[in-house]
Length: 276
Ligand SMILES: [Zn+2]
Image 1 (cartoon, rainbow, N blue to C red):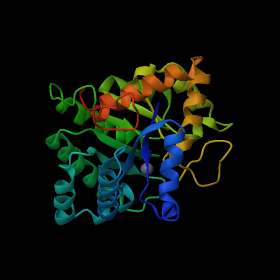
Image 2: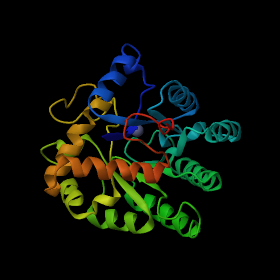
Image 3: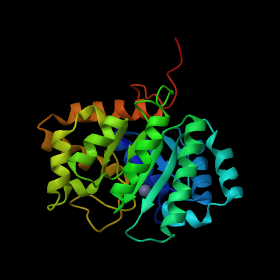
Image 4: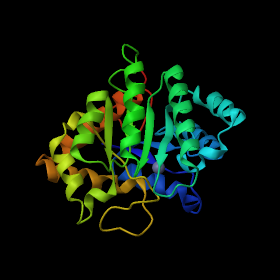
């Protein structure tokens, strides 16, 4: 059993064959998929997918690329969606100083506003961090302190497609974050990421695809999909010198703890089996 903790199932790349993609995920042992909102329409689409498919959960939020579109009205509409029972987190939110598609001060403002909203909502956050490690940690450190004693303590969120070094990884874990590992861990040049995976406790790791992006080896460069999350888990197991079963069970339990959903042994479902 595996959970793909970060997918973009609503993206156009899946329009042609979404049901087949979901069926392949199920066959590959993927019992839950968290599909991620990046703006208002994709957050709405994520919630609709979660309503249509038992194994799919949603997050809602405004990606740093589109931070400039986060005005009061959009935030209010995202907030309305956030209360939905299958919305398990606010995200993806954060900072992207690689593409800089929104001005940096606008990104920071949107990031802080959505962190405050997540805290009020009582749901964890999914963090996007590209070439902004220092500022991400600065903002998250302050926010984490404010959450001390709240139900979110110890499960504040996840740094998705983690790309920092071991010092940052350990600091994030200390604050109460999980790290999510994706396709790049399977690439030949992933030495620093392998070092992080080896050193941090399995209890703080998640696996994801970030599909349709970042396809793991041997699919690199092609469209990614949730079924491929097993390739990420296999590489994590190899790096840590653990059986795949153990990595699968632990990362699934971690996803349940962070996102507050429960997967029963029948697999793929959000609700327990009916009582006899
Ligand atoms: Zn993403």
